[in-house]
Length: 371
Image (cartoon, rainbow, N blue to C red):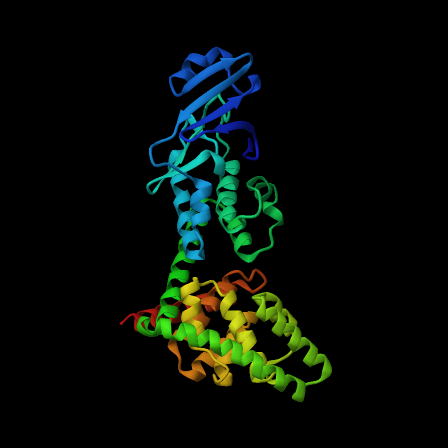
């Protein structure tokens, strides 16, 4: 396979316990083969040089570790481990950063092939390239369907809020400080969610939750036909169809033009459940929240999740405070903090004041709920 790190192409071949890197005559100094041999096993074939590496015992390909990281928190934790790469750089050995050239050994990140200054590709250190590779490695965890090379080439064009913040980091310290903040916020959010339902009643609620969804859909159809306009009726039925096949994002889009007051409870329920299913939570945590929402839930609860799904976090916060629910309040503050932090159009002073206020509320609620 051919690897590209934004600067140099390398040919790579893998077996169960070995990795071979093939470099052409332009990528190494023929007069320095003896020096190269002191660092790795090499074989010269015509003008090419084949470099063989034996993998450490228990080494797991970085791509495999990335696939095993399913939740946002797991991805953030793995992304934070990439900070280990900073310690691998020195004046002489230059690591070639690419997911296919990296392995996990225990909790340690290992780069298999490194160049040697002036004699083997990569043959000199480039701070900007190193930072771009770090950013691309991080984003590859959250964009698994995109080839690494495409992420690297398209960094400046990424418009996802999280991706933009990663790309805008002006150095490794800023980059990993942001990741640590994301981990802390995500952990706080998950901790708040876990308290919504006791573990002992989880299995019972799981079954009840599924039945409630089906009952809501059946009862909702009759209501829609009797009480809504033809256009709204069509949109609601379309949302139902999307909902039934688990296309929660489309269910939200189908009804995004309607204010909550224009929707009946069945429609609100569909939007609330869709919002929860699209939330950045584990499957178990989503089920915990779903077990607290039903077709009989009050309008404030349903509207809370409806607004959360639409990104209208201030409205969600107001509803959570009206409900007197500290867990929901914490979740709303957490999302408000993230949305504000990523808002590059807000005035600086106003933004910092809001972030400070939200952070204070998050800390106070987290401590209170942790007692």
